[in-house]
Length: 209
Image (cartoon, rainbow, N blue to C red; front, side):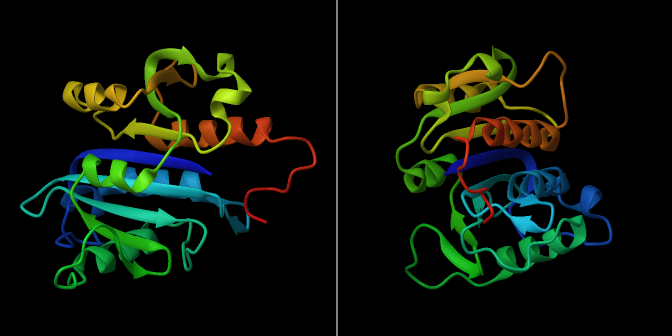
């Protein structure tokens, strides 16, 4: 299983944003939702072995984290507005009294109070990688290192703050890049999933089947 952790430095942690002006009212949550599409969806299907965490670090309710689990996700569409609607409903739902960790709000969509700490507690084992244009080229990473349950941390349109970078690397993470140029976050996610697809053992079933 591949896991993606997208860190939204300005993304709102509440449902108080407009679907009519997502980019302008949500702290660029739209950037993070594009990463969900890139990680979870392929032509006519959902990658059932992928989980995406959106770490929301802005607003009075921050930090909070949205988790999209491909194994049980339903009604996930490639269009930005339906994804934003799912996020808005999940963030706006009342949290059960005494609940801890991630609480499922829709099929495959859960919310937790807390940021990176909540994600780390939920992840379990797996090799960590920080997507960084100055890192080692992913094509030079051994198949064995990308096998199992890798975790890929990536920033939003602002990248990753120095403090967050230090926290990820303190988890034993390795800094890697997908190419020589700086790309949009969702394009980076697409290239990582493509790299994993190419490394899948010959004859193994596709991730979404």
